[in-house]
Image (cartoon, rainbow, N blue to C red; front, side, top):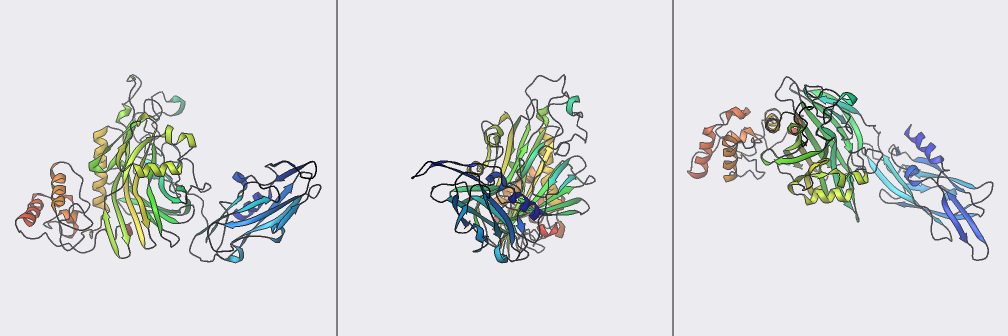
Length: 573
């Protein structure tokens, strides 16, 4: 079906005019009127694809509607891929003369994957090139015909689903998008789950649209390509038909694990360099909190090559209900590794409101980052940075992100950054997981993060963030998270050192509301919980044992029950 549509489009050529009157050296002006497919519409691109080992022929017609014969040279240029994958038929080779008058066209064939030169089943191969056109003797011509083609076993259209915890829902898509540009009532909102603002459309006289908290969101990955920057995302309507859009590679039915469900999809960067697997972990109504969702996102090389200088993160356009449309404020909470937006409340409108919009919140929190390289697995909660910015300055003007600007902002904003103009305006949030990152063929990056929303004030929202960290530790951390031979690495240092940082971490958690340990086994220093330690097993005896071991020559912490770091966590899902 895709190939038939492509041939139909490529054959339809009478739209754009590219020509002028040229003064001949030996006579009057000659009228050159060459008609070609407009580049924005008829370039050969997605969904152009073929199977491994199978060439794809596309007919192509050039018209001369002037009053003088036109000679033109067409040159295939390959930007990547094996030599010879892009060719043209004999009718289009050499100096092609397009006559004027009644028979004023030349038709030939563009062949992609010529001779089936790409033939590696089980892989996805991205091919990019162009056809340069030079009208002989004139020194200039129309823009090149850009060519993109994918060689794969099959292609997939985007699939949609709605996930729900029992007190909020979110629409997700198999190309990484979530929110679907403010679809409404499935956007981490509480409209169907007890919100006092329960009217929509013309009947809604209360300030703020309570049907949407997340307008749109997706993963983001950027890299340099020559003098330019390439970014891929699936936010603000950019999908697989755009050169910045992710391409879906499949969607699996949800798996019910009892206290949570797992929804999984795969998608690739537009050039098929990086494969991304996203798993949504959805707590079910009968268990724990229901105001958060957990994302587990895996990044690895899809083409067997090393990819360097990557900027990897997540972009979310929160539209938290506010006094005026979706104007928001923002902030962060270090202990929960959380950046948030909340609704702006600045009007004296208590007579028409059912609650203060400033009590409505949404945010993303970092849970854990796992890196697997060969047989070595490390895990920690370190990430590069997070910031909020004004959509009027960074999104609206271009109808979406500008790759160079987005990559620059993600790189420049290390740590938590709340821009000075991020006040009572339409904001987006970006969390950067890794900057200038290298992904080798034997390396895998896995990021666990949490999306949280709330409508009952800051304290309730922070409690939900803390609840997400706790839920993650209680439900998803495998019993083999203990890193080395003994416990005590409370701060989960990848080097597995037991030092003052572990003591500080344990004291903060026990007495000042600090973040929960990533591995309960490491914090259960005396091993009172055996091989299945939990929050209930962490008490003063663990702190005393750790102090004695570090400063008075006391007994070492209890042995780890086996395993290495976070091995098995990804497979557990």
